[in-house]
Image (cartoon, rainbow, N blue to C red; front, side, top):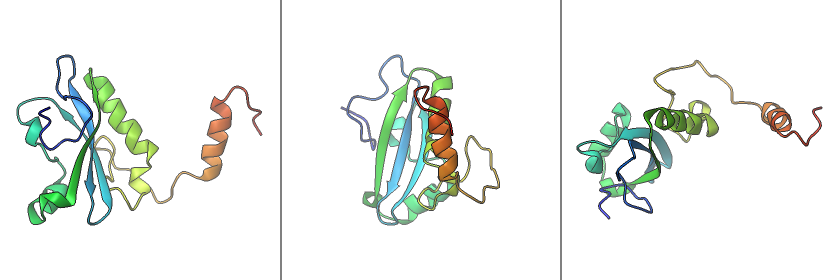
Length: 133
């Protein structure tokens, strides 16, 4: 396989796929960055479009980072949706673990995480076999 920096279980960039969702793990600082990348020239050596990550990668040894492909997708719409879904799922803007503070170049002034009650009630609503309380 020739996936460049990217750890993935199969060859990336095969016909029919437009791009991939990735996580860069800063193993030293124990922080994460999530992004998306279209397959084009140079994706094998692509590191990140994040200004902060570019600075960190330039200043520190590359072996302090892991470059992980989560999945590759067939359409740009799904690629964008997968990035947004993942950032929301991990609550990146309110997490101290994620370098990401914006989702799709939108910045919300988020000052509190999604409450456990919100998550619990949402789980009840989407599960048609449960009673809503």
